Image 1 (cartoon, helix red, strand yellow):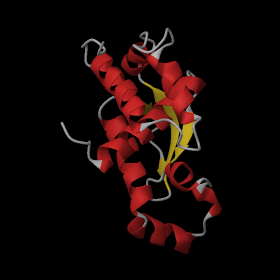
Image 2: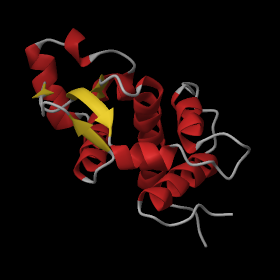
Image 3: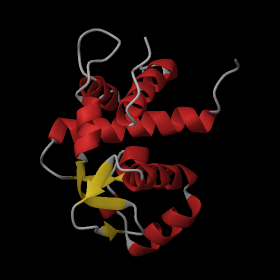
Image 4: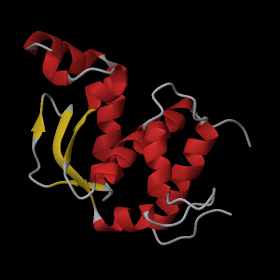
Length: 153
């Protein structure tokens, strides 16, 4: 089996970061700033012209927005008031769904910490030291737990 496509590695890394942040703040809702995830500074620091250009031309931010929207649309997170600001780059009032929390509380296959704790550690890895294979394993285990399967051994 060959190397995974780069977009899947990116999706897994963003998923780990978003779900790790939600897990570490649970049950307190948080704001997910896709620009900050992609670029390291808040979208609220940009002016209107920069925002308009950003949404259309910054592929990395669009990929982050698409990942968060996918997680929301498939039941991993909810926006309590369905507020979207700044061309859907800023998702406010987000929290894990009960089913996502249950899957994240499952014991991981690596060590004796939960999947949620592993995702939280991955989310803190700003230098990108965590290997894509580890991220893929943790995210894969979470998705299997979410859909009622068992984590890989």
